[in-house]
View 1 (cartoon, chains in turn yellow, green, blue):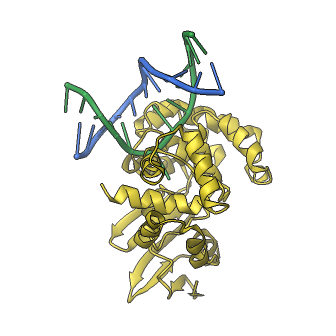
View 2 (view 1 turned 45 degrees about the vertical axis):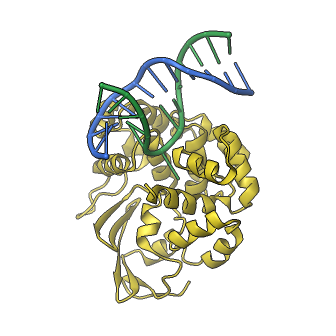
View 3 (view 1 turned 45 degrees about the horizontal axis):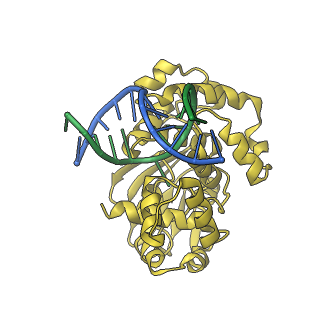
Length: 274
DNA sequence: TTCCAGGCTATGT
DNA sequence: ACATAGCATGGA
């Protein structure tokens, strides 16, 4: 990926594997705001960036250039990944449609909270709830940092309900308190099986949300979250319905060690067809 | 009005 | 181990 770091910005010249709309709206992240077409504000922990298409180049304006080079995974070759997972015509169409998708290197805490909120919910409200949670974080002037784990403890079940979390409010409340028992960074050393078992012990985390956290929070690319949209994709490709766990494992077997990337292209593509 | 949204928990067999 | 009711909320 051809990019250049200047004082307070990253300039991306090569846009065949980078499209900010694809990246942010493919369902992996809920902490952004669209200002206009190809103009987005992106929030991660206490960091902020504005991403805008100018003269066929993307300008990522931020005080944290190094952080966002990693966040946008700019040093990974998505051309090679796309080639590897283009296993059938359906997949090729999905890649062609969402050519600029990249899997973000998000913060674990935001991913865990975000995907607990996501269960049986719609993306618009998930984004809204995640935005409201930031009001409990540090005031950075023109935006709020995502609350630290300590600050998340200040949020009551009632608060979460007022943010539109619905019945997930208690899940969030309980999980936040359960996270005190571990060092989140150390959980990155767990193998995937151990990690998934631990994630499933968190309230509000079932098989699908656990897979999302593994994929988007831990970068375990051999995980394949199956939601209502991927169920439809699975039936399109394999012409039969099975339980979600079996669909997930079959999809990992089919696409291989980078199956998680395939999941994103497919989810984005299928949702666009409605 | 009913169905659906990036499903999970609790309870039953 | 597998099946299913109930769950908040708002938009289609």
